Length: 410
Image (cartoon, rainbow, N blue to C red; front, side, top):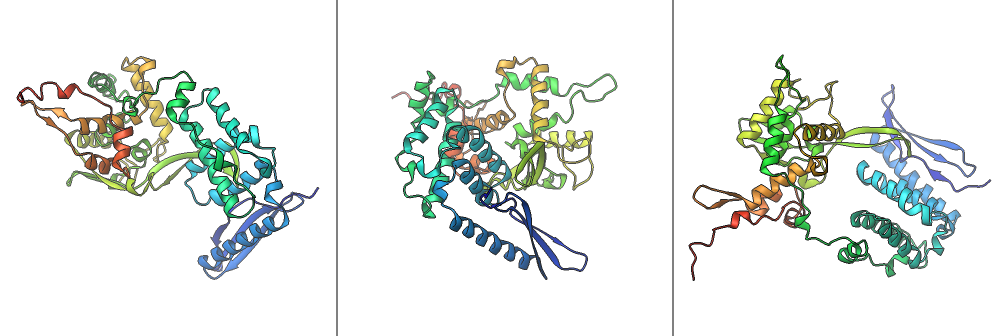
Protein backbone atom coordinates (compact mmCIF):
# COMPACT_ATOMS: atom_id res chain seq x y z
CA UNK A 1 0.00 0.00 0.00
CA UNK A 2 1.31 3.43 -0.95
CA UNK A 3 1.47 5.81 2.01
CA UNK A 4 2.32 9.44 2.57
CA UNK A 5 6.01 9.94 3.34
CA UNK A 6 6.55 11.34 6.82
CA UNK A 7 9.41 12.77 8.86
CA UNK A 8 9.99 11.00 12.18
CA UNK A 9 12.67 13.31 13.62
CA UNK A 10 13.91 16.84 13.08
CA UNK A 11 17.54 15.73 12.91
CA UNK A 12 20.42 14.98 15.27
CA UNK A 13 24.15 15.75 15.09
CA UNK A 14 27.27 14.29 16.72
CA UNK A 15 31.03 14.59 16.39
CA UNK A 16 32.82 11.44 15.23
CA UNK A 17 36.25 10.11 16.22
CA UNK A 18 37.90 11.74 13.20
CA UNK A 19 36.77 15.19 14.32
CA UNK A 20 34.11 15.56 11.61
CA UNK A 21 30.40 16.04 12.28
CA UNK A 22 27.69 13.53 11.38
CA UNK A 23 23.96 14.03 11.24
CA UNK A 24 20.82 12.04 10.49
CA UNK A 25 17.09 12.39 9.88
CA UNK A 26 14.68 9.45 10.20
CA UNK A 27 11.56 9.20 8.06
CA UNK A 28 8.90 6.79 6.80
CA UNK A 29 8.96 6.15 3.07
CA UNK A 30 5.91 5.63 0.85
CA UNK A 31 5.77 1.95 1.90
CA UNK A 32 5.78 2.72 5.62
CA UNK A 33 9.37 1.60 6.11
CA UNK A 34 11.60 3.46 8.55
CA UNK A 35 14.54 5.02 6.70
CA UNK A 36 17.54 7.14 7.66
CA UNK A 37 19.13 9.99 5.72
CA UNK A 38 22.78 10.61 6.73
CA UNK A 39 24.83 13.80 6.49
CA UNK A 40 28.47 14.69 7.07
CA UNK A 41 30.52 17.88 7.28
CA UNK A 42 33.54 19.60 8.76
CA UNK A 43 31.48 21.65 11.22
CA UNK A 44 28.22 21.20 13.11
CA UNK A 45 26.84 24.31 11.39
CA UNK A 46 27.48 22.75 7.98
CA UNK A 47 25.61 19.58 8.96
CA UNK A 48 22.71 21.54 10.50
CA UNK A 49 22.35 23.55 7.29
CA UNK A 50 22.23 20.33 5.26
CA UNK A 51 19.57 18.90 7.57
CA UNK A 52 17.50 22.09 7.36
CA UNK A 53 17.67 22.06 3.54
CA UNK A 54 16.76 18.36 3.40
CA UNK A 55 13.71 18.87 5.64
CA UNK A 56 12.54 21.82 3.55
CA UNK A 57 12.90 19.80 0.33
CA UNK A 58 11.23 16.79 1.95
CA UNK A 59 8.20 18.83 2.98
CA UNK A 60 7.98 20.51 -0.42
CA UNK A 61 7.98 17.08 -2.06
CA UNK A 62 5.29 15.76 0.28
CA UNK A 63 3.08 18.74 -0.49
CA UNK A 64 3.70 18.34 -4.22
CA UNK A 65 2.80 14.64 -4.31
CA UNK A 66 -0.52 14.84 -2.49
CA UNK A 67 -3.24 17.35 -1.80
CA UNK A 68 -3.31 18.27 1.87
CA UNK A 69 -7.04 18.96 1.70
CA UNK A 70 -7.71 15.31 0.81
CA UNK A 71 -5.83 13.91 3.80
CA UNK A 72 -7.59 12.93 7.03
CA UNK A 73 -7.18 15.71 9.58
CA UNK A 74 -5.45 13.31 11.98
CA UNK A 75 -2.64 12.67 9.49
CA UNK A 76 -2.28 16.26 8.32
CA UNK A 77 -2.46 17.90 11.74
CA UNK A 78 -0.11 15.41 13.38
CA UNK A 79 2.47 15.99 10.64
CA UNK A 80 2.13 19.76 11.15
CA UNK A 81 2.63 19.34 14.89
CA UNK A 82 5.69 17.14 14.54
CA UNK A 83 7.40 19.06 11.73
CA UNK A 84 6.53 22.68 12.49
CA UNK A 85 5.60 22.91 16.18
CA UNK A 86 7.88 20.37 17.89
CA UNK A 87 11.13 22.18 16.96
CA UNK A 88 9.80 25.66 17.79
CA UNK A 89 8.05 25.39 21.18
CA UNK A 90 9.01 24.20 24.63
CA UNK A 91 8.48 20.50 25.30
CA UNK A 92 5.77 21.17 27.88
CA UNK A 93 3.90 23.28 25.32
CA UNK A 94 4.25 20.59 22.66
CA UNK A 95 2.97 17.92 25.05
CA UNK A 96 -0.11 20.09 25.65
CA UNK A 97 -0.67 20.55 21.91
CA UNK A 98 -0.24 16.82 21.33
CA UNK A 99 -2.67 15.83 24.07
CA UNK A 100 -5.27 18.41 22.99
CA UNK A 101 -5.14 17.12 19.42
CA UNK A 102 -5.26 13.42 20.29
CA UNK A 103 -7.92 13.58 23.01
CA UNK A 104 -10.11 16.54 22.09
CA UNK A 105 -9.87 17.01 18.31
CA UNK A 106 -9.09 13.69 16.61
CA UNK A 107 -12.00 11.71 18.16
CA UNK A 108 -14.48 14.01 16.37
CA UNK A 109 -12.59 15.28 13.32
CA UNK A 110 -9.60 12.99 12.91
CA UNK A 111 -10.98 10.81 10.10
CA UNK A 112 -12.57 13.62 8.11
CA UNK A 113 -10.73 15.01 5.03
CA UNK A 114 -9.25 18.41 5.84
CA UNK A 115 -10.99 20.11 2.91
CA UNK A 116 -14.41 18.84 4.01
CA UNK A 117 -14.26 20.29 7.53
CA UNK A 118 -16.73 23.13 8.01
CA UNK A 119 -17.22 25.84 10.59
CA UNK A 120 -20.20 23.85 11.89
CA UNK A 121 -17.95 20.81 12.47
CA UNK A 122 -15.58 22.90 14.58
CA UNK A 123 -18.41 24.56 16.52
CA UNK A 124 -19.71 21.09 17.31
CA UNK A 125 -16.35 20.14 18.86
CA UNK A 126 -16.31 23.31 20.99
CA UNK A 127 -19.94 22.89 22.06
CA UNK A 128 -19.34 19.26 23.03
CA UNK A 129 -16.40 20.34 25.18
CA UNK A 130 -18.70 22.81 26.95
CA UNK A 131 -21.55 20.32 27.50
CA UNK A 132 -19.14 17.71 28.85
CA UNK A 133 -18.10 20.15 31.58
CA UNK A 134 -14.66 20.99 30.23
CA UNK A 135 -13.18 24.21 31.62
CA UNK A 136 -13.21 27.39 29.58
CA UNK A 137 -9.40 27.50 29.45
CA UNK A 138 -9.23 23.92 28.09
CA UNK A 139 -11.88 24.69 25.46
CA UNK A 140 -9.90 27.79 24.51
CA UNK A 141 -6.84 25.58 23.93
CA UNK A 142 -8.82 23.53 21.39
CA UNK A 143 -9.89 26.72 19.63
CA UNK A 144 -6.37 28.18 19.56
CA UNK A 145 -4.75 24.98 18.26
CA UNK A 146 -7.27 24.64 15.43
CA UNK A 147 -6.81 28.33 14.59
CA UNK A 148 -3.03 27.93 14.27
CA UNK A 149 -3.36 24.78 12.18
CA UNK A 150 -5.88 26.14 9.66
CA UNK A 151 -3.95 29.41 9.41
CA UNK A 152 -0.87 27.37 8.41
CA UNK A 153 -2.91 25.57 5.72
CA UNK A 154 -4.41 28.81 4.45
CA UNK A 155 -1.07 30.64 4.20
CA UNK A 156 0.45 27.67 2.37
CA UNK A 157 -2.36 27.65 -0.18
CA UNK A 158 -3.28 24.10 0.83
CA UNK A 159 -7.00 24.78 1.43
CA UNK A 160 -9.49 26.92 -0.48
CA UNK A 161 -11.18 28.28 2.64
CA UNK A 162 -10.37 28.57 6.30
CA UNK A 163 -13.31 27.21 8.36
CA UNK A 164 -12.04 29.03 11.48
CA UNK A 165 -12.90 32.39 9.94
CA UNK A 166 -16.56 31.85 10.81
CA UNK A 167 -15.92 30.39 14.27
CA UNK A 168 -15.97 32.59 17.35
CA UNK A 169 -15.18 31.29 20.80
CA UNK A 170 -18.08 31.84 23.15
CA UNK A 171 -17.55 34.55 25.74
CA UNK A 172 -16.55 33.19 29.12
CA UNK A 173 -19.66 34.53 30.88
CA UNK A 174 -21.98 32.78 28.40
CA UNK A 175 -19.86 29.62 28.48
CA UNK A 176 -20.08 29.35 32.28
CA UNK A 177 -23.77 30.26 32.24
CA UNK A 178 -24.46 27.40 29.84
CA UNK A 179 -22.71 25.08 32.31
CA UNK A 180 -24.80 26.45 35.17
CA UNK A 181 -21.75 28.05 36.79
CA UNK A 182 -21.34 31.53 38.21
CA UNK A 183 -19.06 33.89 36.31
CA UNK A 184 -17.10 35.33 39.22
CA UNK A 185 -14.60 38.17 38.78
CA UNK A 186 -11.14 36.77 38.07
CA UNK A 187 -9.59 38.20 41.23
CA UNK A 188 -12.13 36.30 43.34
CA UNK A 189 -10.88 33.03 41.81
CA UNK A 190 -7.30 33.61 42.93
CA UNK A 191 -6.33 31.04 45.58
CA UNK A 192 -4.28 32.23 48.54
CA UNK A 193 -3.41 30.97 52.00
CA UNK A 194 -4.84 32.77 54.99
CA UNK A 195 -2.50 33.85 57.82
CA UNK A 196 -4.04 31.11 59.97
CA UNK A 197 -3.29 28.44 57.35
CA UNK A 198 0.30 29.67 57.00
CA UNK A 199 0.80 29.37 60.76
CA UNK A 200 -0.57 25.81 60.67
CA UNK A 201 1.86 24.91 57.87
CA UNK A 202 4.83 26.45 59.69
CA UNK A 203 4.01 24.67 62.93
CA UNK A 204 3.91 21.32 61.16
CA UNK A 205 6.70 21.81 58.61
CA UNK A 206 9.57 22.18 61.07
CA UNK A 207 8.71 19.36 63.46
CA UNK A 208 11.51 16.92 64.24
CA UNK A 209 11.70 13.34 65.40
CA UNK A 210 13.16 12.44 68.79
CA UNK A 211 16.61 11.96 67.23
CA UNK A 212 16.53 15.51 65.84
CA UNK A 213 15.93 14.48 62.24
CA UNK A 214 13.44 16.70 60.34
CA UNK A 215 10.02 15.10 59.93
CA UNK A 216 9.63 16.57 56.42
CA UNK A 217 12.31 16.75 53.73
CA UNK A 218 13.32 20.24 52.62
CA UNK A 219 10.08 21.76 53.99
CA UNK A 220 11.72 25.19 54.15
CA UNK A 221 11.45 25.42 50.34
CA UNK A 222 7.71 26.14 50.66
CA UNK A 223 8.35 29.19 52.83
CA UNK A 224 11.14 30.34 50.53
CA UNK A 225 8.57 30.20 47.72
CA UNK A 226 6.05 32.05 49.90
CA UNK A 227 8.56 34.88 50.39
CA UNK A 228 9.91 35.09 46.83
CA UNK A 229 7.05 34.10 44.52
CA UNK A 230 9.09 31.33 42.89
CA UNK A 231 7.27 28.95 40.56
CA UNK A 232 7.49 25.24 41.35
CA UNK A 233 9.84 24.47 38.43
CA UNK A 234 12.00 27.49 39.28
CA UNK A 235 12.39 26.34 42.89
CA UNK A 236 13.46 22.88 41.71
CA UNK A 237 15.88 24.47 39.24
CA UNK A 238 17.76 26.61 41.76
CA UNK A 239 21.42 25.80 42.30
CA UNK A 240 23.37 27.17 45.24
CA UNK A 241 25.42 29.56 43.11
CA UNK A 242 22.18 31.30 42.06
CA UNK A 243 21.91 32.69 45.59
CA UNK A 244 23.87 35.70 46.83
CA UNK A 245 23.20 36.00 50.55
CA UNK A 246 25.60 38.94 50.93
CA UNK A 247 23.68 41.05 48.41
CA UNK A 248 20.37 39.45 49.51
CA UNK A 249 19.34 38.45 45.99
CA UNK A 250 18.31 35.26 44.21
CA UNK A 251 18.97 34.82 40.49
CA UNK A 252 16.33 32.85 38.53
CA UNK A 253 18.08 31.36 35.50
CA UNK A 254 16.47 27.97 34.88
CA UNK A 255 13.47 25.77 35.59
CA UNK A 256 12.84 22.05 35.85
CA UNK A 257 9.99 20.73 33.70
CA UNK A 258 8.41 17.31 33.37
CA UNK A 259 7.64 16.12 29.85
CA UNK A 260 6.42 12.92 28.25
CA UNK A 261 9.13 10.39 27.41
CA UNK A 262 9.40 9.96 23.66
CA UNK A 263 10.98 7.47 21.27
CA UNK A 264 11.42 9.80 18.35
CA UNK A 265 7.99 11.40 18.15
CA UNK A 266 6.12 8.51 19.78
CA UNK A 267 5.11 8.92 23.41
CA UNK A 268 6.69 6.32 25.68
CA UNK A 269 5.94 5.29 29.24
CA UNK A 270 6.27 7.75 32.08
CA UNK A 271 7.83 11.18 32.17
CA UNK A 272 11.31 12.63 32.24
CA UNK A 273 12.65 15.97 33.44
CA UNK A 274 14.38 18.59 31.37
CA UNK A 275 16.26 21.56 32.76
CA UNK A 276 16.17 24.71 30.68
CA UNK A 277 15.20 28.37 30.61
CA UNK A 278 12.20 29.40 32.73
CA UNK A 279 8.74 30.12 31.35
CA UNK A 280 9.54 33.30 29.39
CA UNK A 281 12.25 35.87 28.82
CA UNK A 282 10.99 38.04 31.65
CA UNK A 283 11.10 35.01 33.96
CA UNK A 284 14.89 35.31 33.97
CA UNK A 285 15.15 37.78 36.82
CA UNK A 286 16.62 38.73 40.19
CA UNK A 287 14.47 38.45 43.31
CA UNK A 288 15.27 40.37 46.51
CA UNK A 289 15.51 38.21 49.63
CA UNK A 290 13.88 39.20 52.92
CA UNK A 291 14.98 37.89 56.32
CA UNK A 292 12.60 34.91 56.22
CA UNK A 293 13.79 33.88 52.76
CA UNK A 294 17.41 33.98 53.91
CA UNK A 295 16.56 31.91 56.98
CA UNK A 296 14.85 29.30 54.79
CA UNK A 297 17.87 29.05 52.48
CA UNK A 298 20.15 28.50 55.48
CA UNK A 299 17.79 25.80 56.82
CA UNK A 300 17.85 24.01 53.46
CA UNK A 301 21.65 24.12 53.28
CA UNK A 302 21.97 22.83 56.83
CA UNK A 303 19.79 19.88 55.83
CA UNK A 304 21.76 19.08 52.65
CA UNK A 305 24.48 20.95 50.78
CA UNK A 306 26.28 19.31 47.85
CA UNK A 307 28.25 22.27 46.56
CA UNK A 308 27.76 25.55 44.73
CA UNK A 309 26.89 23.85 41.43
CA UNK A 310 24.39 21.46 43.01
CA UNK A 311 20.62 22.03 43.38
CA UNK A 312 19.41 23.82 46.50
CA UNK A 313 16.83 21.04 46.96
CA UNK A 314 18.42 17.96 45.36
CA UNK A 315 16.72 14.60 44.98
CA UNK A 316 18.11 11.45 46.59
CA UNK A 317 20.72 11.09 43.83
CA UNK A 318 21.89 14.69 44.08
CA UNK A 319 20.10 15.72 40.89
CA UNK A 320 17.20 18.05 40.27
CA UNK A 321 14.00 17.23 42.16
CA UNK A 322 10.89 16.55 40.07
CA UNK A 323 8.31 19.34 40.43
CA UNK A 324 5.56 16.72 40.84
CA UNK A 325 7.35 15.27 43.86
CA UNK A 326 7.45 18.75 45.39
CA UNK A 327 3.68 19.04 44.88
CA UNK A 328 3.07 15.64 46.53
CA UNK A 329 5.13 16.69 49.53
CA UNK A 330 3.08 19.88 49.80
CA UNK A 331 -0.22 18.00 49.86
CA UNK A 332 1.12 15.67 52.58
CA UNK A 333 2.19 18.70 54.63
CA UNK A 334 -1.23 20.32 54.30
CA UNK A 335 -2.95 17.10 55.38
CA UNK A 336 -0.67 16.72 58.41
CA UNK A 337 -1.21 20.39 59.31
CA UNK A 338 -4.95 19.75 59.59
CA UNK A 339 -6.08 21.60 56.47
CA UNK A 340 -9.19 19.76 55.16
CA UNK A 341 -8.69 18.07 51.79
CA UNK A 342 -11.37 20.16 50.09
CA UNK A 343 -9.53 23.34 51.20
CA UNK A 344 -6.03 22.25 50.19
CA UNK A 345 -4.27 24.21 47.45
CA UNK A 346 -1.55 23.65 44.87
CA UNK A 347 1.98 24.99 45.43
CA UNK A 348 1.24 27.87 43.03
CA UNK A 349 -1.05 29.34 45.71
CA UNK A 350 2.11 30.30 47.61
CA UNK A 351 3.04 32.54 44.65
CA UNK A 352 -0.48 34.01 44.65
CA UNK A 353 -0.24 34.69 48.39
CA UNK A 354 3.10 36.44 47.95
CA UNK A 355 1.79 38.68 45.14
CA UNK A 356 -1.47 39.45 46.94
CA UNK A 357 0.35 40.45 50.13
CA UNK A 358 2.79 42.75 48.33
CA UNK A 359 0.07 44.57 46.40
CA UNK A 360 -2.77 44.66 48.94
CA UNK A 361 -0.22 45.56 51.57
CA UNK A 362 0.16 45.06 55.28
CA UNK A 363 -1.37 47.48 57.79
CA UNK A 364 1.24 49.17 59.95
CA UNK A 365 0.96 50.14 63.61
CA UNK A 366 0.16 53.75 62.69
CA UNK A 367 -2.79 52.65 60.54
CA UNK A 368 -1.04 53.16 57.20
CA UNK A 369 -0.68 50.36 54.65
CA UNK A 370 2.74 49.31 53.38
CA UNK A 371 2.56 47.93 49.84
CA UNK A 372 4.49 47.81 46.57
CA UNK A 373 3.55 49.28 43.16
CA UNK A 374 2.14 46.65 40.83
CA UNK A 375 4.98 47.18 38.31
CA UNK A 376 7.57 46.22 40.91
CA UNK A 377 5.59 43.11 41.87
CA UNK A 378 5.23 42.11 38.20
CA UNK A 379 9.02 42.41 37.81
CA UNK A 380 9.65 40.28 40.90
CA UNK A 381 7.24 37.61 39.62
CA UNK A 382 8.66 37.70 36.08
CA UNK A 383 5.42 38.72 34.37
CA UNK A 384 5.43 40.31 30.92
CA UNK A 385 2.65 42.75 31.86
CA UNK A 386 1.12 44.19 35.02
CA UNK A 387 -2.31 43.08 33.74
CA UNK A 388 -1.33 39.44 34.28
CA UNK A 389 -0.31 40.23 37.85
CA UNK A 390 -3.44 42.20 38.64
CA UNK A 391 -5.93 39.81 37.02
CA UNK A 392 -4.56 36.40 37.94
CA UNK A 393 -2.42 36.84 41.05
CA UNK A 394 -4.07 39.35 43.36
CA UNK A 395 -7.03 38.29 45.47
CA UNK A 396 -9.34 41.18 46.24
CA UNK A 397 -9.15 42.11 49.91
CA UNK A 398 -10.82 45.16 51.42
CA UNK A 399 -10.05 44.43 55.08
CA UNK A 400 -7.00 46.71 55.08
CA UNK A 401 -9.16 49.63 53.95
CA UNK A 402 -11.12 49.75 57.20
CA UNK A 403 -10.69 53.08 58.95
CA UNK A 404 -8.50 54.66 56.27
CA UNK A 405 -10.98 57.51 55.63
CA UNK A 406 -11.70 58.31 59.29
CA UNK A 407 -9.68 61.54 59.07
CA UNK A 408 -11.29 62.69 55.83
CA UNK A 409 -14.65 64.08 56.95
CA UNK A 410 -16.09 66.30 54.18
